Image 1 (spheres, rainbow, N blue to C red):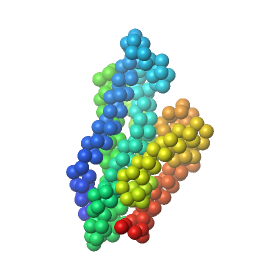
Image 2 (cartoon, rainbow, N blue to C red; image 1 turned 60 degrees about the vertical axis):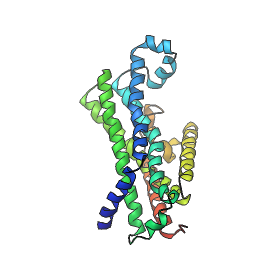
Image 3 (tube, helix red, strand yellow; image 1 turned 120 degrees about the vertical axis):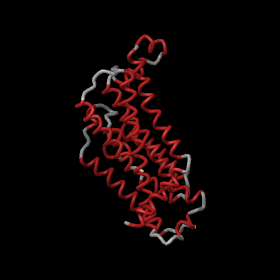
Image 4 (cartoon, rainbow, N blue to C red; image 1 turned 180 degrees about the horizontal axis):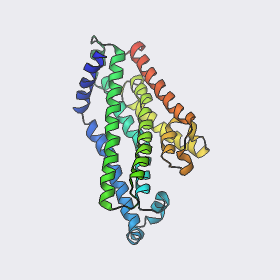
Length: 261
């Protein structure tokens, strides 16, 4: 535990000294502003019709410029966009050691490889949670400025719970990305893995088996496929946690036993 306390600040310093925090921050912070733009469009149908986008966007957002529609959009965005942004964070934190050729120096330190891996995952979790919380708070700010109707403390509580669950599920699915970054010795393998899982998630949902595919579950929990999809079973949640644990254990085993040349 003492070594983890020492390693985590070092990993945080390495992470913050890169451009990755800024890139990922900008990538996700666009979400509440884009959502706010859609709400403004829906509040003024005349302008929307002139822009030629009212029919499609109104269908997606339920034709309501209110807090429930806005936060539904944010939750869906964090569930889908988070797979890419959180995965990008994970691939950089693990993949950079190989691309920068610092892996041998890191493993030569008198620190357990398990400690190094766990420290990296802690940094990933902290930053991804920070991004999620930032999106939520900025979303509140944007929604207040627009003046969306439907605000209440009950709504705030329920929407924050759903948003938190979807964010957590998405973050948990980052651990397999770490394994592919380690297995592929860089960024290409994890990025390819993320693209494949996104494509497969769409196909599996269309086939009606989304609740059994880990990378479809956060989006389904956000209600992206309708109200009925938001009520996930314990089996779906267990699948996400199991996938996360497998990714974590696989990464630890790879760092411990695989040839890092």
